[in-house]
Image (cartoon, rainbow, N blue to C red; front, side, top):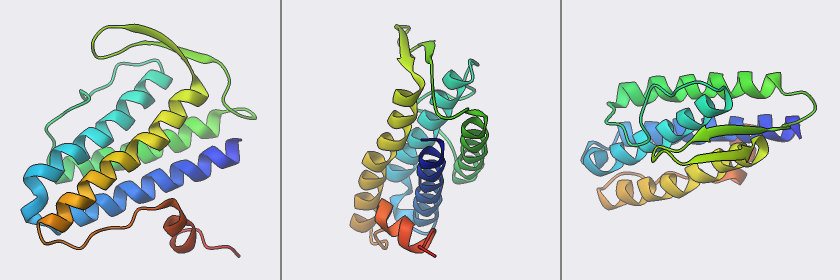
Length: 154
């Protein structure tokens, strides 16, 4: 399970970097795409903070520049790699936290990691549509593309 999660979070980081690069080279998309990209990255950050039992330093819907998004993406990548590296044989236990609306929850660690993995593709799809509509090259952030390009079979 730990190896699977490590691979999935390499995919998340790869897809985040691809999306960031596509937004960066499509200025006409910035007004619509940048808030979604900032949200995607901030949500990853918020979940990591919850997993580490600390307060997040960004709200779920922040206003961030492209450079700030770039920095946050790098922080998220390093943070999740470190978190997964600290897991024993796999994620166990649950996390107590409050939502941004103040609701208290207890959620299994695996469910939180699954949320992070599955949340991003939704917003990356929205961003890709915006980029295409504003004249940019539509990006492919499919997992299978990651396996072919970033981690081809030996």
